[in-house]
Image (cartoon, rainbow, N blue to C red; front, side):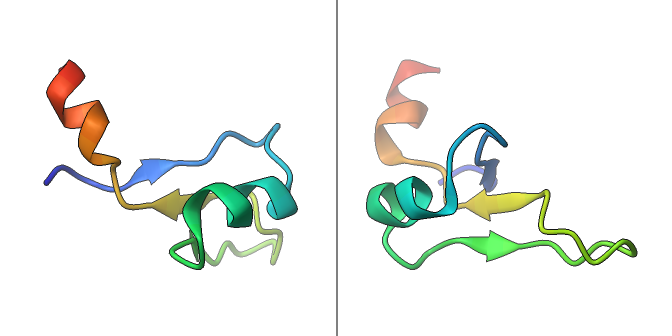
Length: 49
């Protein structure tokens, strides 16, 4: 398994939750804004590498 990957900022929170269940981790930033969302790397992404 690889490192966590970032959910693109253009993906809404609702769509991200649909695609990644509740595996989303939000990185806390000093600004308090939830810009960085991480999810476990999908298994099929490893096969494509």
